[in-house]
Length: 179
Image (cartoon, rainbow, N blue to C red; front, top):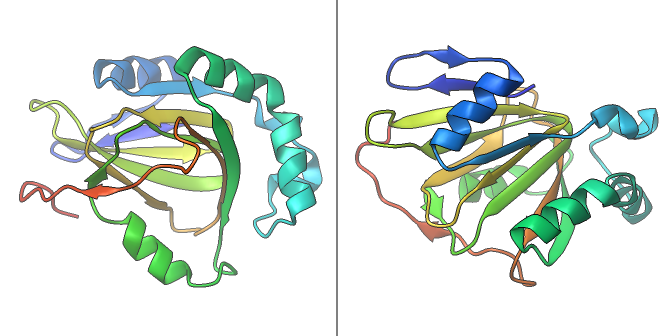
């Protein structure tokens, strides 16, 4: 279950309803899918064949299509990252800079853990959303953020897009952001 850490105060927000309410106040969509639907063989697997990716997409087809219909997403895929991922450090450097997009950045975590760092309202500042299997988040277009791995450095997620070529990151220089 997702957990939030507000960076300015170190306050932690736990519990599905509390997390959902906080994120809603920051214009971020949060949902939870049942991760136990996924076959046990894929619940902790982070190097995936095309067939295994297709199995994950088929397992969550109803949820994906429901979210896509409600939010206007037209295409989706699977991203799997772990220490076995070629050029992982290069990829992470690209992710680990505050940026915006011209469409939502959506992740439905199916295995592992990841973290979104998001710029909230002026009274909140930056906050971390720690995600695990079953957590679904949509960071709205133009909202400064970035995504990275947790200490275990393993994640599998469904990504949904409006534009069929996927999103493009636009750097967001913010002197108020400190890692």
